[in-house]
Length: 448
Image (cartoon, rainbow, N blue to C red; front, side, top):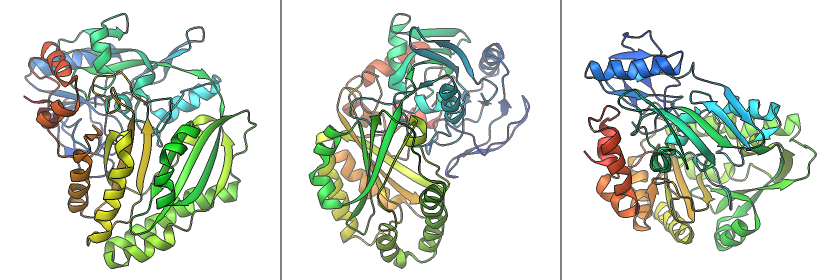
């Protein structure tokens, strides 16, 4: 759900062979002039130089979990799947270097085998490393921030085909921006993450009323390392999740419990419920009241990625805005009031998460304590009316949309909500003056 943001359902062809591509949600597609799957960084550099020589724009594409057209091109589409795997482990420095086409699921498993872990991550792990960082993928955390905030160095191929190394000491102005670069500054080839010894998290999932969870929101955030909750529209019901470090040992959900909660309820039954809701929208409020009571309280302990992430097989379209944390409860109450008085029928829960301020130029949490509110609609269901109404609320609270999720904002808006927006666009002008890495989405969000 940037430099490598999409492509799960695309068909990678040989260099020079046109082929179609569509993202995971099915709302974005492209037909590039040719597709290249480089087997090395050198081949990627050659592909970039070749695209420039042929007057074609070039983009890299990952697993298709972005809902925007950030990775769309009619020129050369780079598929980085062959650039994968851990390339270096530095236990003294506490870092791991990984090739950009590595899928997070594979990275997490490889780190666990090394007795290591990222500090925080999002709730799915199907994205490539480069796609996840380039669009600002995040989880929830009181003290620990997005995946990009855990980067200590990166390498990218620039518009002139050079391989540029970036860190706080080497090309620091590029490092400040390229950790979340939306694919505008170059093609990321390698990322060095800060990691730590593998640890345990204990998760407590518990139903809670909307009025209570919003009244106690700041308290829950302060008391838990990772707090999030889901509100079910058309009801006053929420499901909360608290993740905190523990001494272990691992005590994962039992096989039957895990299947019931994660497969039957969260995927199988949820798929059926959404399919019924799409066919009979009037039934959605009644379905929501039943569905929101189906999940029960449970507590379990496991290594981080098995607690942070969960399978997501029901396809949807999503909009998510990052608000100043102090605005979150007010905006959420406005959203609930809007849904309650409208004719909208919403079958997907609304997700609320938090993040500390960070120092990345175009991070949605740049310079401010942040809360995220995400709205979803089932794939194939008209979402424009709901998202438009929600976006009106979010922008009134100085919201910043997720770079990889549906929104209608443009460069003029971003210049007002990102104090360092001009710093990013000036850097882009220096690094890619001819817009080799440009496309229509970047023209809208960054300007011409």
